[in-house]
Image (tube, rainbow, N blue to C red; front, side, top):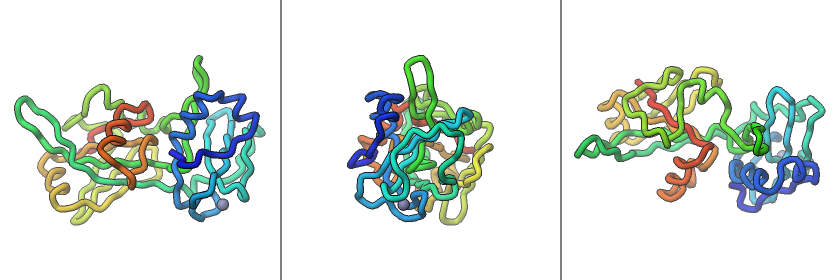
Length: 226
Ligand SMILES: [Zn+2]
């Protein structure tokens, strides 16, 4: 969520409407690497929508770098994919297995703090995760936590100090340092829960916003088999 909101232009306000605009602003976070490569800082950013017909995305920028606009000229204004902040955190998640409580390791990833895809349906525009995550077999947490049931397009890696994950169709390999206790939990179960979300900043995670993130349509989960 952008703590100070964002500057928007009239066309964006009209195209999205108030509810969708709130959803989009809630799915964007002040990252370290805007399109110019520097931190967003505490300034109110501008919101730009690139509606390229094959895909639509919302990004935030310093106001001096890009004015707020709804761009449907089919020309990409910036190549922001080279300058996106992704953040990760590792967790231990308690699960009931009959009468036993199992503690499974988790890797929570926000793949792009400053950018979110948009999709349009009958009710209007909504922020969404990149289609690659669902295509890799990740599903909504409401369908249950997939402990030990691998997502086909996801591979987990465990090193001496960290977790990482490779996802079919994603260029990035997301990684995070993990304490021995958490690495041991992953080794014991042969994998960890991958949580991909635009609904939380992994560096500002609390129990409350973790629960909110699990309930969000902007979160998908899957088992990363080692
Ligand atoms: Zn800038």
